[in-house]
Length: 211
Image (tube, rainbow, N blue to C red; front, side, top):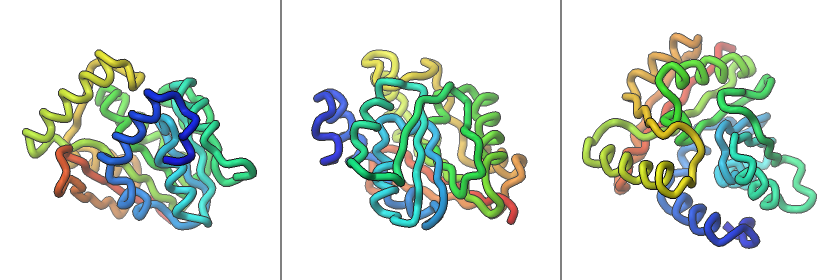
């Protein structure tokens, strides 16, 4: 969080809440320890920065449609740091690879189901042989957690405008997304609940491109 000390107050508060509520460590653990990693929908770059700090062998590039957030992300990069970079990118666009890892955290729900599936297919096509695709989203169960999350997102997107994207959310069952990953040609698909002790239904999917 120290990297964002010069960010606007509203952004710092949002980042603090994000840091306290999102299970970043298991997301990082699912990614490769070396190589090139892309974060799609990086926002202010919190996960990308954390990943670069935790994994010295990784070079991280984060992209997002929100130019203002990308400016904050770029400003957070320490002077002389060459393993961490950020750039603006249109919705649904995935930079050319090959990438050893691609990660999406709470991004897909802002797209309709067709858009989600298309983005996952695009990500899969950008992976290097043996590369990993990691997706952290909110599950649809337990229902009380899903309802709480939907309410919070409604406030964040529709009222406060913190997140850019569709105002019609599409929370998809993790089993459905896992099937999409298989249909995209990925293997070794693994699912993991990350909501224990948390109010939100965090869920992780990780898959691998054929070697």
